[in-house]
Length: 136
Image (cartoon, rainbow, N blue to C red; front, top):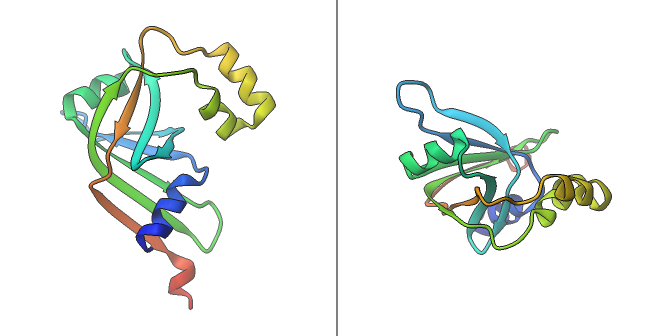
């Protein structure tokens, strides 16, 4: 994929899989919701969660997103992560993944709390593939 194509793909709605080094074990890999904005991947989480603790310790992570139907496409980004305080509620993220009605319900029932953080992953390394292009 070109730079424009990969950034557009990452901007689309996909469930991501976040992978973080977990010493003594294989990497922790789990599905996440995310926003890609201004060159950063934004992931909301509880600041006391295993995810947040591992991100603080590792300082880096990988996130992969893919399509679920052929011709398959994927984008994988890896880079440093900074945990910052949220600047608002989680309505935008919830609406992105659940739509307006269910997103509002989710945001109302899962408010940003004092322990909430936003992990900001800055992509340094990209891996992408578009199988649709490979078929032409």
